[in-house]
Length: 555
Image 1: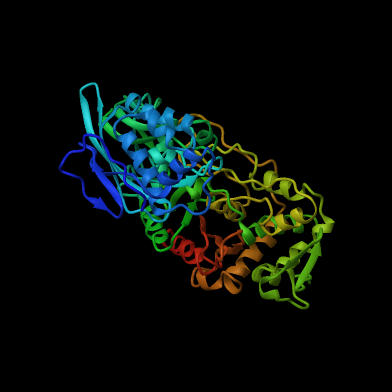
Image 2 (image 1 turned 90 degrees about the vertical axis):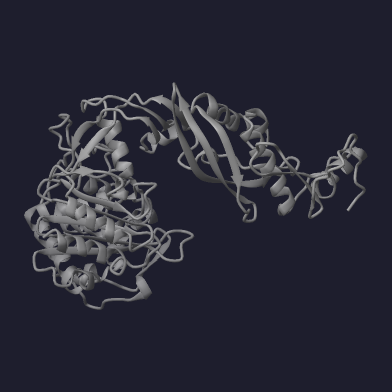
């Protein structure tokens, strides 16, 4: 410890010394504010200033530096000093704008910030405040966190600023606003006329936000007053809807009827809750009606808006292409070697298995990668893209299901990337909605765009596919999926659900994940479903039981 500075006029009642630091409790602050009087970073900065040399601190942050930076930020924010709080971050311009709007736009007052125990450089904290607007008020409590980082130019510890620091539901570019919502609330109904709420179906929070954004102004309701997240350009580009955080006065809701089945929705919620990061969608193939959608994580609707490599479930589309072009036939022999090299990449099967003298049906059922990669040299770069668009209605960004959704992406690729796309890797991206639609197209024989709200409600035009599979291709594709459900990688999950059924499993490798994403898509009768369990492992063991259970319950 260095020498302590004397402070003129110090009171006789001295504050307690905690671990070499003096803890000063700021009146009304609600937590201890720590001021460094000697030692650590402060001593180094004074020493550097005295010598006239600029010292750039490097290396991991100390607990003292984290505590000092976080205290400076939280204290300034709590006392409404937006400029000072912003200066304690690594992005003062962005932070200052949002922090100033906390009182001005969001109308939040009586703010109390209580930090929790830091975990390294990450500092959790709790916010308690009051939302007050034109004589109306309600309490607001939530938790958030931030990370302290070292500024590259001088090593100073600062809060790593993102909008989520202010509130965890904010994305960069979003704002908090209190006032008349502008968009009246909606009362969503299931297909039987029962009310659909996030309290009953936790997965549907983002869906209800989307319904309100799409139909609030036309469903006959009246706006209320609320604190809400207003999305910025980036969030809107990602198709995220505005989100209500606190309702100060209720508006009068309009009514929107959905296609959801209450029994299947309840079952879907229950099934995904058994797995971390699981998502599932159930459709009616003959119409495209969405009967259920559920995610075990409720902050983002992966089932509708996810963008993930679909792995071997993509082989349903690829198989239709190969059969169309005469490059494969269900019962004809087809190569399935241990490895195949194309475009400079060496492609493997799971555990480097091979099927000697086997049929294409056997390769599909066991999910042989090389059976598909071996045909890449006979395909044009855009063949798979055209098949996905023209037959399965995917990758054209024109679905209008009633809420925001991602319609899948099958970009034109070349060389090794094109080959990887054939097995659902490379740049191909899908979600359970897309893959449930693929199974539904095989079951019905033609593409019916999925929808959550009937197009008759707002006279919107549904997407269409420009052509259908030939009868020969369709019958073989159904045979491939039926055989897989009975004897292949999907057999365990689909046991007892035949004979009017079909399925395909998938496992998609993801950089940085120890386990692949497990996929499963299937149909039974007039139901089709698809699910994914991220970082779960093989699809037959993870997503398979979820999908199969819903197909059984919906029969």
